[in-house]
Image (cartoon, rainbow over all chains, first blue to last red; front, side, top):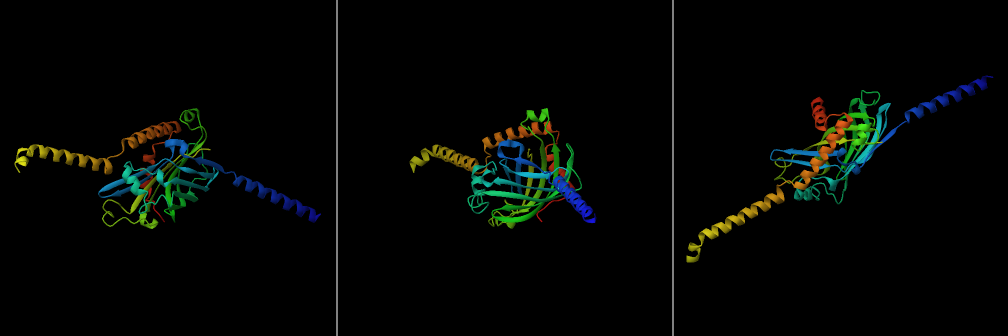
Amino acid sequence: MIVRTAQIVVTSLAGLALMATGALAETTTFKMSPEQGGLNRVVFENDAPFEVITGITNAVSGEVKVDLANPSMATGTVSIPVDSIKTGIPTRDEHLQGEQWLDAKAHPQITFEIDKIDTKAKALKPGEKVEATVHGKITIKGVTKPVKAKAFVTYRKATEETKKVWIKTDVLVIRAVFTLNIRDFGIIPPEHLAGVKVADQVEVKVSLSPAM
Amino acid sequence: MDALKKNWKLIVLVLAVAAAGAGYFVYAKFFRTDPAFVAEQQRLQEQRDKANEALGVVPAEDDFEALKASDEPSAE
């Protein structure tokens, strides 16, 4: 009798554990691709005393996996081709992609990997903007460094209105800002440009709308 | 020498045109923002504006300013 009771208890606990795991595993994958046009955008702003260089790309690929009931466990990757970053001046773009700067031939992608998200929000509810700190790793020119970015995340359900503007499914609207030091990634400006036309700090502004 | 004295106005004119041409070349090559790039960015911005309106979210720049004001994020 005791053995039978123990078996029932163990089986019940195992069942509960499985149910709990199932609930935790309810992740939704939101994907982004260059086909989304202007909806995804990453801007690199280098504000030096004699020149402001703004590099822009919309060719963003990747995915964010998030449990809407527990956003802090979100993971994901974002990648952009280096040769898609444009500053508006073709000659400068050629320089930017050259060996001395981003070295697009040897390191064709910039990637960002999301490790975890700190947020006070317990869940992502439709239409509710959530403030968060995104912790991750960024790889530029083959060098990987930890990064934390302040971000707003909003979960939006698809509506008739959004379907009219190419947003056919539910989306996450993610806006994030962080700064980088280019020297950390082995990008060393020539002495005559350093601090004059090229600053060490680059502000990165990320605007993403990954969709289901 | 006489030829130079007689034609100095023409020579100055030719030099001025050459200098202006060289200046424009340098400007176009190194400083002028590509008009096609500007037009493409405007098109994408219009796309984003419509999407923001449909989604009921503020423009990204507003969020960036709010985030920067709240704290100064940085590389760890």
